[in-house]
Image 1: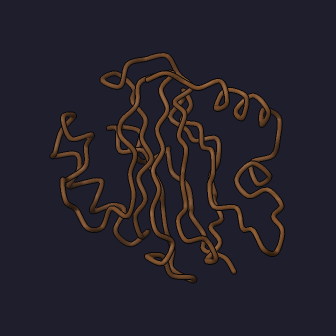
Image 2: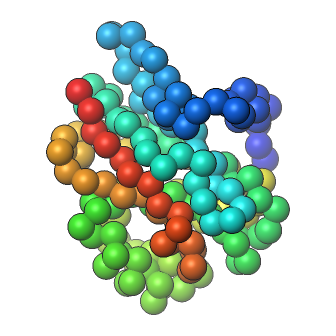
Image 3: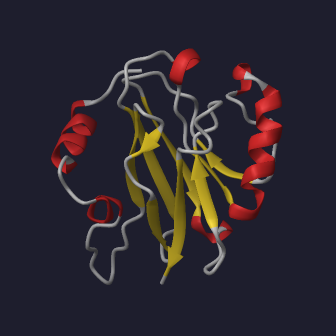
Length: 160
C-alpha cells in the first residue's frame, strides 16, 4: 500500500501535538469529529491510548498508520475494537486462528471493527456505525499480533 501525501501531511502536522488534541480536536456543536488518526509504532504501542467517539456521528472511521519498517509477518500492526469484557477471549481465540487470519477468528461477532494487518509504512482505515456502541459501555482497542495484544491497547469512549 502507498501512503498518500495527504495522510503524511496529517501525520506530520500532528507530531508534537497532544494525544487528546489529535484524537478529538475541537468541533462545532453542529459537526462532531467522526474520525481519528492512530499510529501503530515500534515498541508495541499506539500513539493514542484513548479515543472519544461522539454519539452524534453516524459512522466513525479510524485511520491506522504503521510507522515501523518491518513486514507484517515480523511485527505487524492492526486496530481491533471489542467490548472490554470480550477482549481477552477474542485475543485467546484469535491466536489460534494464526497469521493467515491476522490472529482473529473469522466471523467473531465480538469484533466490532478491525483493520487488516499492516507492514511498516502501510496504512488502512476502518469505519463502523456508531449506533452499535452504547454510552457507558467499556470498549478496548488493541493490536492482535502475537505479543502486541497486551501492550498495544487503548480505550474507546462514547460521549454526548
